[in-house]
Image (tube, rainbow, N blue to C red; front, side, top):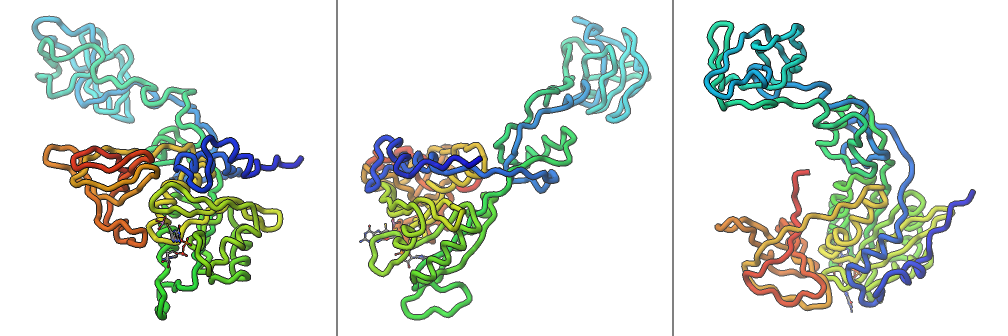
Amino acid sequence: MTEPSPPSLEAISSCVAGYDPHDLPVAQAREFIRQMVPHVAGVEMLALRSALGRVLARDVVSAIDVPPQDNAAMDGYALRGQDLAEQGETVLRVVGSGLAGQAFAGRAAPGECVRIMTGAVIPEGLDTVVPQELVRREGDRIAIAAGVARVGDNRRRAGEDLARSETALAAGRLLRPADLGLLASLGMPEVPVLRRLRVAFFSTGNELRSVGEALGPGCVYDSNRYTLWGMLHRLGVEVLDLGVVADDPAALESAFLDAAANADVVITSGGVSVGEADHTKAVMSRLGEVLFWRIAIRPGRPMAIGRIRSGARQAVLFGLPGNPVAVMVTFYALVRDALLAMSGARPEALPLARAFCTAPIRKRPGRTEYQRGVVAQADDGRLQVSTTGAQGSGILRSMSQANALIVLGHDQGDVAAGEVVSVLLFEGLT
Ligand SMILES: Nc1nc2c(c(=O)[nH]1)N[C@H]1C(S)=C(S)[C@@H](COP(=O)(O)OP(=O)(O)OC[C@H]3O[C@@H](n4cnc5c(N)ncnc54)[C@H](O)[C@@H]3O)O[C@H]1N2
Ligand code: MOO
């Protein structure tokens, strides 16, 4: 059997309404990429802790009730709700006690109750737990005032967290700390996850020097491999750093072939604009099916997208612009979700918060802008945002100082002080 060949880039572009490679709105670029990227196959079983940040390969269905039995939510006394008097005091005899992991073995008759601790199984026939703070104890009796307890209080039901046969987590879930705990609560020592996506990356440009090297005249240090490494690492993909590649056709070709032979995705930075010195675009085109877009985005206008072949293998290519902020913005706006989808994860839209601007922002309609912002809580409790200052796409400091991206939509014009905008917060709890 042969694998069906993926649709050509031309076929995909004809399916994306409003596709214009010379001025491509971000939404259309994202839709194109969504249709283009294949998904990894291959499942491995991992010990629970090793599965953090990995993609669940199959639905996990609970084989047990969690909790397995009705149990107490408070330290106090388990009783029959029916015994609670509507008026006056209810007086009950204490006939034993139940601890978590050591249930009360006897039976409590009407008019009797059992001392119980949080997590202990509620004895048969009893249905209500009254916290000890609400009870007056005298010898082997307790007295409860009318109205302080109702039938069913503080009873945690069997299966109320997860019922047997219920889907606990669906395939495609990117496993977070709570998920590891949930799987552990089902007693699962191992979990099936998809293999990690392999992403190779390198920087192009003769002016680039690696950290630790001396800077010659006209040279700059290569920062893109560090931001890219960080963003990829956080996504949980396997990263393959192929270094800095000189702007030389043979060196570029060998780097692309190496990358495509060993990875599912190749990400480069630099050499995708209109400059004369660059061989990058020519080599990309020779080795695969590659489009050179001009996206209606700022920063990050030029970008190469396509597929590169190495023998029988084919890798998806993202040729990001060289400017350091453009690399990060295009990664978050266009590449991140694609890598998650390729990894088999169900895409979850990044949460956009709303904040008011402390100062006006200039914005031209007809492109999506991602300005670097600092979000803080204003005195009235609302979120406010201000830009980090100069927004040039070579000013990486703006990204480092920011704690959010201010996302100004395609049709948005100038923003007035006090106007509310969308912000993409960098840090979350997950
Ligand atoms: N005439 C035009 N010039 C430019 C255009 C345009 O449309 N017409 N677009 C500009 C935009 S927007 C961008 S973005 C850049 C993208 O150019 P390239 O992708 O070809 O990138 P380079 O020219 O190689 O580099 C741009 C800039 O970034 C620095 N750089 C590159 N790689 C790294 C790295 N790994 N670490 C740190 N800095 C890096 C490089 O030194 C350049 O300064 O083109 C504009 N020009
Ligand atoms: O699109 Mo470029 O990234 O602004 O400099």
